[in-house]
Image (cartoon, rainbow, N blue to C red; front, side):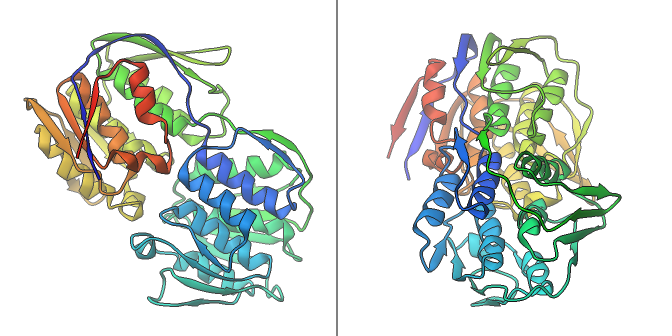
Length: 408
């Protein structure tokens, strides 16, 4: 675990960034591909460690699915192993085994899955013993905890003998990720209905398809932030589509308030500087992975903003709310909870000569705080943490001639 030192730089010549492929799309199409016995032609899969872990586990099919720190892989493969009637142990890193999975296990048990906890009730590791008979075609799932539970159930729904109706209870968070799952399923021939709080998927077959994964909008967000915080420059982000399935494409609208003009062109999107309009508030319910990036951007740009929809951040790779609070304080900014689940960004007034960022084993902490380089020297602890979703991130920083040095 070294430390990466980034020298201050605030001007960037027009540079093209070859973004990584979407981890979210990749992991979904891999499950769909496995459910069609690999008859599809899938291209441009993500280089992210989470995706590579899923590829390896599906290919090797070991008795123990060790997902490392990949939450999506844990949830999707738990449902996949159950519906394909396998005997599997599901486990991961110590932090992964602290992330709840009870809502998904309860849903799988209710339709006939046999799953046992091997340690703490409601958390991995798990022992899966398949699903020999479907008991019901209806299940209720809370909508406000993790959309990944819902997506996991949706993807297995077509292969269930009775199909599945999912009733979403309460507020639905990360709705765009559920929509992404359904739209990807549709591209592989699946018909569904979503009426009110009920999603229905009849028993039907996935159809073999050719599919190319789009570039990653979550990864794109850090470059939007960098340009927003810079004094001058322009960036071209390769491989992004205007009509994207990814909810994090909302970054275009958010950053329009924070000084970045976006123009879609052949092959990607051009980012250019424009005056800051101001971001008074934003609800991150459907794009929680953007919250860290936008929080840092607002803190740097002097934007006193109100954030809501951050509930799911507490059960990610780390408690992201706590982590943000600790690291923003290092350059005299604050994420203050002014009432339950309502947070205020109090921006930095004075910037230290250098800031050392602890990353909490969370890839997004490292990348979200990188744009601080526009204002001061930045030290990033455990820089390899980006391998989870964006292994080439630091190489892409080098494309912008950001001077870097690794320290032990």
